[in-house]
Image (tube, rainbow, N blue to C red; front, side, top):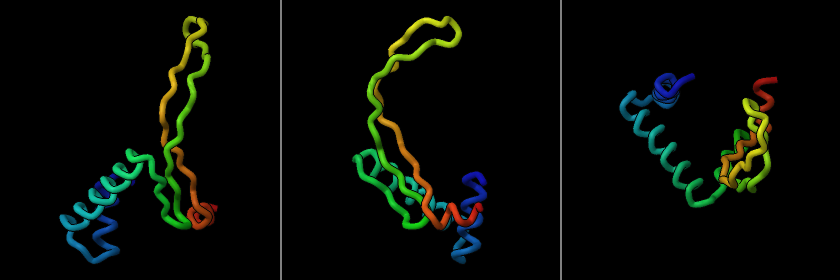
Length: 90
């Protein structure tokens, strides 16, 4: 499902116009981005949890040249599926 299909489905389920559904989806995405940028955890009970974790710098190997490289530290988004979501796909 892509964003356009998600908007259409939200419009159908919520009884909204596609324009209003697009505004709602865009607002939800922005709220999630803002929370993650601030280092907050985003939880939708039973569905998913999003959090930001810091990965430390580490050693790696360039597969093309086999040379040792240093992979810099960075922040990554961790996604954990909730029980309700896991049960749906079983």
